Length: 85
Image (cartoon, rainbow, N blue to C red; front, side, top):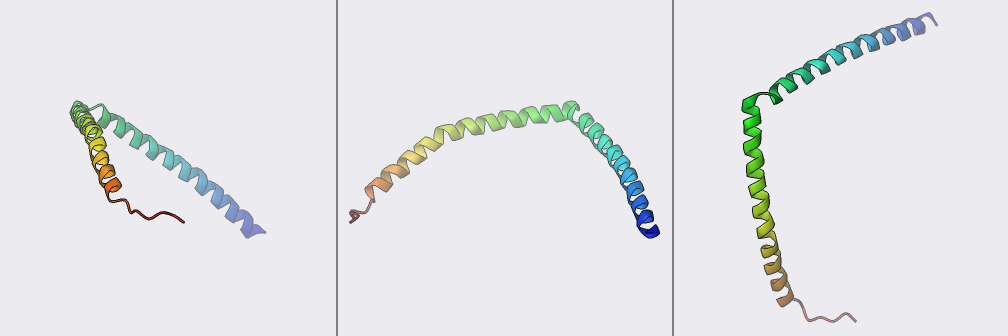
């Protein structure tokens, strides 16, 4: 019984110390990520990427219906003439 109590006390102390260290590390990561996201160079790069993504999306929006339409017509021409029965 004495060993069980010592183990439980050690586990509780380890848990408390581990969560405190984990919280400090979390706060450090959060602080650094905020500093990076507020950097003007990072914001400028993000804006460039947003612009490129928008142009790619609009290009895809135009091209997909053309590609699907062509494949649909080809598939209908090559449709087998087998009747279920």
